[in-house]
Image (cartoon, rainbow, N blue to C red; front, side, top):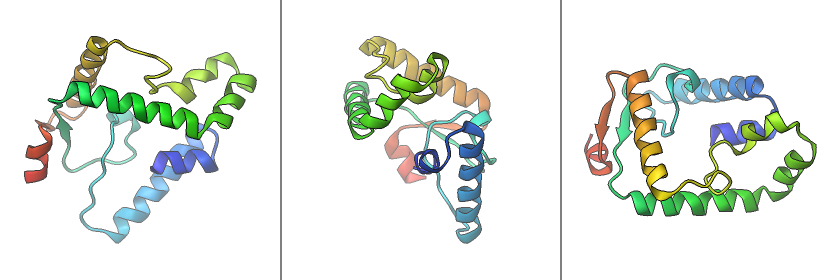
Amino acid sequence: MRYENNWKKHKTIDTVQKGVVKDINAIVSKNKDTIFVGLQGKDNVPFTPDVVYILIRKDYEEYYRGKLVRDLNLLCKYKSEFEEVLKKEPFEEFRNHFWSNDIVAMKSFDEFKKHVEKINKSIQKDFPTSEMLTASEILKK
């Protein structure tokens, strides 16, 4: 949500990132124990986390269907903004706006599963002390 809110205020990745860092610092300064949920490699995390858990998915079909529905809803919700991007932004900027949308970059179900596993391995490499856990195991922690 921090990124989405900052994209509404700022239009370049640098100013968005600075806004996110400012928001995170404000939250952490007010709350000793804070949990952030997201999907980022270390290059895109504007702080050093104390603990990293990587969610191991067992429900790939449900996860994939849910992701497609969320991505479709985002396209519908921000339809006019996406239209402006497609009409006016340089072609090389398109991926900055649609990079994670699986409706736009449709993957097969098998490609989606392989992509999730690849991302998890990448995050584990970025955060060597991370633990790979199922959702119920994370809740127990």
